[in-house]
Structure formats: structure tokens, C-alpha cells
Image (tube, rainbow over all chains, first blue to last red):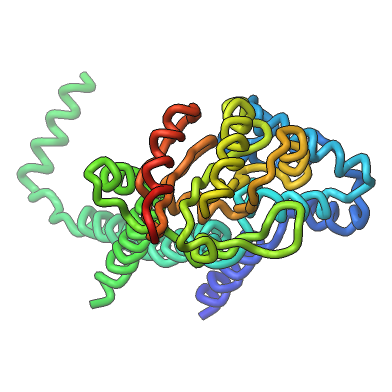
Length: 168
Length: 185
């Protein structure tokens, strides 16, 4: 009973740790109510919609045009969030590096932690079973070794004799 | 029965993920070969998303292909950052001067571009034909377009009769559009 409770507690702790946002993210969200937007920071989070790669590495006419547009928005004093909203209005959701958490896109956010939790559950169920089986098998081996019949007196005498001869 | 519960669950999850992958791959972009093949055969497919009303660039209001039914329409997909688009813009504008007198028009569609850059492009190129914005790209993709420039000629019955998936030239445009202008709707 105690073991089951411990296992459930462990699972809940692991699942919470998996699903909860990292402390650094939570802290940055709290401390960056009005973040100063920088081109480098935004480039890392948005895509070149024509070349379908991160704007940070994209080299094309469209990428240059998008960068110029972002520079203009930064010059207007917009925050990173406002700039990203503006980019979505101009280029569509395809401009975002991380897809919005809605519709089929939800699978991107739900599946990885779900698979991790499923893996942990499978481990929590199968590992104790496997350990029980291993223990039972070794106990059986030990008991079968201990129940071997003793040597009969003639063989025991012959063995003692041989050992004495061997020792000189 | 319990022995099979975990393998069955794992198999179900794996099958679900595989189905998701197949779905994703199947819906990745549109196959542009069907429109090209139909036009090449002379089947002339109806213009897709004819009822999609997209916002006009620089002015209030929307425009759809259905709203232009009965006219010959030259749909030109472009972006301000695209050099071939800059090269073909004067050709299209010249053609527009002829088309407007014959119940026909060029319809520009900006794609993968921001509105201020598109507006600047329209001013620089002295474009007078209507230009719509396809922000999501769904209208453009329904034509099988993946980049810029691409041009589609639609007859008075709303069917695609010719297309060009790269920079156009004046001869192609004239030879494609002139015969359609004589046709009645």
C-alpha cells in the first residue's frame, strides 16, 4: 500500500515537473512586462515565410524585406509581442517560429509531454514487476541450490581422501 | 488480459502518431500539377476560391474573383522584394490600359509581403489595377502557387485558360489574352 502511494506520488511529481514551464521562463515572463525589442531576439522567433527557415539564418529578398519591416516597428517603440502580432497580421501565422496553440497545432505542445508521461507510467508499472520477477528467480535459484541432497558417505570419504592426497 | 494492456496501448499510441504524420505530410502544401495538367490538356479548370473576398491593398473593401465574373482577369501573384515581379510590373500596367477598355482587368495579389512595402511598390510602379492581399496564402496556394511571380489568365466564364509560374513577358501575355477579349461571356 505504502509502495503504491509512493509510486503515485513520484508519478505526480514527475508529471508536474514535465508539464510546468521552466522556472527561467516563468521568471522571464514575470520580469519582462515591457521587454525591449531587439532585431536579433525577434529574428530567432520568426520565420522567413518564403524560404521557410528561421529569419536569423535566412538570406533572401523576402528575409531582407521582413527585417527592414521589423526594424521599422522597433523604431516605433513596439514591444516584441506587439511586433509579433503585427507580423502575423502582415504575413500570416506562418511567420511564427512556434505555431499558436490551437487546432492541430496543439499536438506540438501536448504530444511530447504526453509521450513522456506515458513512458514514465509504463516504467513505473513494468520496473517493479521486472524487479519482483528477478528477485523471485534469484530466490528460487538460491533455494534450489540449498536443497541439493548431501553426498553419500562413500563419496564423502572418497572426496576427503582425494583432498588429503592433494594437500600432501 | 492485463498482459496485453500495455503493448496494446503502446501500439495504439504508435498508430496514432503514424496517422498524424501521414495526415501532416498529405496536407503539406498543394499539388500544383493538377491545374497545370488540366490547362495543358485544354480542360480549363474553374478558378479556385472564386468566392474568397480578400482585402484590397491601400483602400477599404474587398475583392473576389466572383465579383469579376464576366471579365477576363489576369491574376498576378507578386511581392515587392521580388526582382522578376519588378521587371514584369510595367508590362502588366501597360496591358491594364488595354484591358480596362475591353471589360477585362489585371488583378494583383500580394503574397509573403507586408502592406507598406506592397503599397510602396504599387506607387513606384504606377500600378492602377486593383491589388488584393493574401495574408494567409490560402488563396494563392489554391492555385498551386508556391512563390512569386506567378500569373493565371481567367476567361469570362471564370476558368483558368493559361498560367505562367515564372516571370512573364509581353508576347506571352498578348498572345494569351487577346483571343479571350473577343469572346463573350
